[in-house]
Length: 135
Image (cartoon, rainbow, N blue to C red; front, side, top):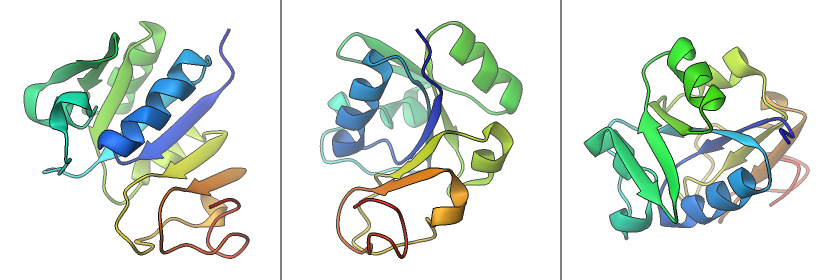
């Protein structure tokens, strides 16, 4: 059962736990990453697909994609698409139910409540009700 689309900004190890849970719950998850993501534990991070083209975390496959057609093809095949988009431009293109900032930059680097009906931030640097709906 598909519950809707969610965008997760960041694909590091902490973000990957969130991505895994959303995927297993039935959401279509698009992961936005930087061109050179950093993760403490790359072997359990979906961001590793940026370097290797694909990765599998806890039995869930993710692939690096480059455009909206490839995002939709990945969704159709129950694969998590991960794309280089540090500015969040794909958020407007897929109009997700929610945006989750899991970048863990210790400050807000651009996520705001206008990005989706539901906005959530993981980690410090955000004010609930001001920057995002939930911290």
